[in-house]
Length: 135
Image (cartoon, rainbow, N blue to C red; front, side, top):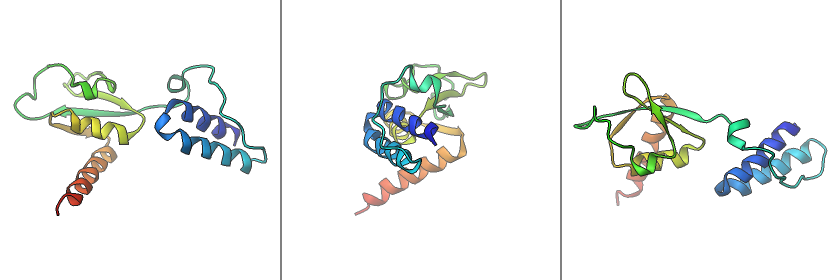
C-alpha cells in the first residue's frame, strides 16, 4: 500500500491542478495502511520519467491540409512526440481533461485513430458542451 501512497504524493507535486485530491488520496491510503498521514515529500527525480506512463494517442489530420506537414499548433506542442510512417501524429498526455481542450483549441480537424476510449471521451465532452449551450 505504501507504493500507492508515494505515487499519489508525487502526483500531487507534479499536477498542481489536482494536488489537493492527490494529497488527500495519499493521506487516506496511509491511514488505511495503519500509518499516520504522511506529508508530501520532495521527489528525488522527475515523476513522469520514473513512475507514471503517459497515455499515447495517434491523430490523423483530415480536411484540405490532411497531407500537410505544417507546424503543430501551439496548444498541442507540449503533447507532440513525432509522426508515424503513415503520417499520424503521436501525442502523449497524462490527463485527458487537459488534452481534449488543447485538441479542440488547435483549430485543426483531427481523427483520433487510437485509443478508442479517447475518441469516445472527446465525443462525450463535445456533446455535453453542445447540450449545455442549446438553450
